Structures are given as structure tokens and as C-alpha cells.
Amino acid sequence: MEYALKSRNVGRASLILIIFDNFDKYLKEEVGDEHYTALSGLLEFFAESHEHPSEGVWAQYSDKQANTLFALSDQAAVKITTRLGSKGLTTPLLLWNLPRREFEGVINEVAELTGAKNFDAELLWNLLGGNVRELGDLVIRYGWDVRRWLQDRVIDHVIQVLTGAAKQEGKLPTDVLERLIELARGNAKDLGLNDTAHPDAVMGYFGLLESNVIINVRLPGTVYLSELPREPWVGRWYAYQIPAYYWVVKAIIEKGSINVGVGDVLKNN
Picture 1 (cartoon, rainbow, N blue to C red):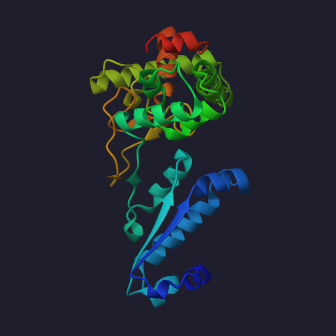
Picture 2: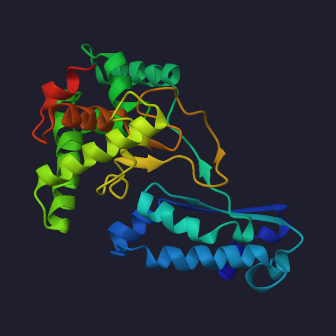
Picture 3: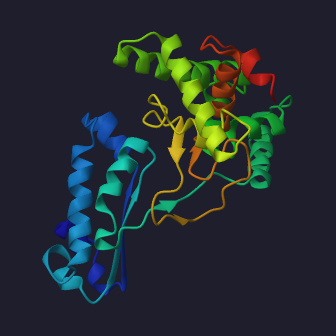
């Protein structure tokens, strides 16, 4: 850390900003740190150092404004950050996907570049919700084949999460689904919602949060860097990472079975 600061001649700067981008992905995929042990230690180190800037690594830079930014997407990693509370002025920041108009502009640009003709911008918004990374996956890996992408990337993932939760509890998938529906209906009733698949009703039960199907959008003290859209897949407390997950969970709840297909999901779009 000290070497990095010195090698960048930060002594001449008035503001120091250190960014750890996709650090959770690096730890999980490259290091094999499934429980983010290293992340926990690093967060604690920086929180402590920012709380006492006149000591340790920041001592010779105490006359400068210093910030450290961790860009995280995995909810298991995000959950670890909540242990810090407000230590070192820790502040959760939420950066959302592109707004609808801007996203449709990107879709049109990509379609022009790739020669795509028969695409439905409204459907893509209802499935991707402004997520440019997923749009890239759809275009590059699936050649704009929405049905194949929906089956491979979304439906199969949700089914695997629920069957995995059932296996972990030593139960049948039908048992887990019955409990999920019961809990979601109860939450929807308590919150005055008429949608059992609403993210605030489902709340990430049975691994849906840990697997990033649903994400927490209201951690204590969150500062919003972008406005969340007013759509059925975004709630006050939780949101589906991409809208396609919402439509899959909705289809599963309506059918009362995890055996749903692309047609079941698209019938509401």
C-alpha cells in the first residue's frame, strides 16, 4: 500500500482516491475465497486507517482528503460491508443500471453495429432493465437469441438456486416452493402489495439473495448515485438484479411449480 502511494507521487495531489473494482469477483473466481475472508480484513484495515488518518499508512498524507472505494456486486460481499457500520465514515453507495431511454439508445446503437433487425426494445427493457453487461452477454454469447438466453442464463439459474436450497435443507423442491409462496404471500399482505412476486415480498428467501437473484437496495445510510426506476421488479427494500428474474419468479409462483419454461415467463410481457 505504501509502495503504491509513493509510486504514484500522490504527495503532489490534493485528493487521494483508491478504487478496488470487482474485488469480490477476483477473490471468488481467481483466489477461491468463497467467504470473502480477505475482503473482510481489507475493509477493516481501511476503515480503521480512515478513522485514524494521522496514524499508519495515511500518516504522511494527513493533510489530504483520502477515500477508498470498493465496487462490489455480489450480495454476499456487500453483506460483509455492513459489519463496519459507520466506522471510518463508511458509506454504502448504490449505482443502478441505465434509465430506459438511455438504455434503448444503447440497444439501437448495438443493433446497428451488429446488423440486428428483428429485436423488441420494450421486451429487452422488461428483461434487462438497463443492464448493459447482460445486453452484451445476450448479443455476444447468444446472438440476440432472447429465448435461449432466458432459458440458459435466467430460468435455469433460478431453478438451480431453489433446488440447491431444498437440497441444503434436506427437503424436496416442492416443499421449498410452498414455503416461499407462503412467506411471500404473508409479506405481500403485510405490506399492502397485490403482487406475491414483488421483491419486498420475496425478500431473497432460500438463497435468492446470496445468489444475486435479488439484491438489497436500502442498506442503512445508502447514498443513491442514480435513480431507481418505478417498475414492478424494484421495491423499497429489495430489487431483482435484472427484471428477467422477477418474471421467472412470478411465473413459478403463479404456476406453483419450478418447472417453468420460456413461454411461461414471456406470457406476462
